[in-house]
Image (cartoon, rainbow, N blue to C red; front, top):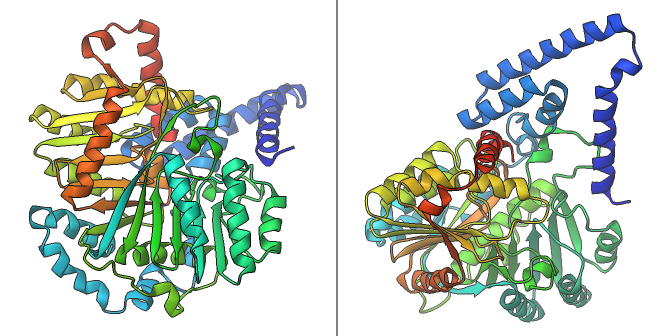
Length: 504
């Protein structure tokens, strides 16, 4: 039996016991148990209200805990308790800033020369640098990889060229045709003496068998399991997942974006059929910045600090001047760096804000930014899936619950035919865009470890615009007058789901 199935069965059994406790204890004790349960729920609700969560999350968790006392309390302990954000990072000898100093030295402050060349976009770059000291580089070449089949083709080719090291970091790795092809190359390279490291998220890879991990390790591949669940089980940090997708080869080639490792991303899954996604192939100075993200995640997972020259060397792409700024965020930060960056990008828009996202669950600030932009004449468009993700129909309903308020302000919403859209793209005007791992939802902005690449380049942005226009042809627009006529029952479902959307 898989660990995920065992977890569900045990949790259902626990709920059964709690709701049938009257069969096991006397009536007098039942009354006492009810009073104690309600008192605990009240205390927990008070702590939520006084805590530092966003107001939307406070409301959702408070209602859940008070109206579904036992189950609500259990879910809050498992998924809601922030546990001082991500305590794991506090236990390590070196902080992320310490690692930055080791890797970059004084060079990290020399990026201001690049920022000043960005003209009106310098304010965005300066904000990103100020929020979390994210470096920017301009000796880069970028290729937009639309969909998994193209990404995997190029990835396999580049893996075969590795001379010194391969760093692999993914939220989801699924066994299948694609993984077998990648695994074969990784093992071959490890046997040739190339250093191969694979970092995977324990929750995202919950179905990845231990047999596969042992096979990789047996063949010389070092592995790291991020935020291991273990099933000592219901610990608060189960909520904090590494949602990043990173590959770095010899610090010369880097990959990041929305595409994990699995057959569905290459259109090989019967349920999804065609899977729309966006990834980046990067060559140049920004690859070193991408590897620094891996170095930090690897250190905080395994305790091994990779600071040998080959890991931190900057391989500039001569003759190329694509400015790239990698924005890194996670629950260990005191501010929502990626979310605040997106708000700034939307507020700076003069012509367009085009978004593609698989999940759309907005907080007040993001919702207001989009509505104000649309009402002021900016062309605001959002593409969401036309087919809900497996097992996530309720999340799809949560996405739909935001349609009405956005449509009222002139935001144009499109459903990607009857297919799944997994791209995480934000295009602003004609000269700046974001491509990365972050969705437009609470989990990406508040709970997950994410990375997005901000591209300050008209050429690359134009390619993203063209791809977006191609996607629009395959979309069905959600017309305000038709959406207004949706059934009363759907309106009720939307209202209920929207209340609890910060918990999804």
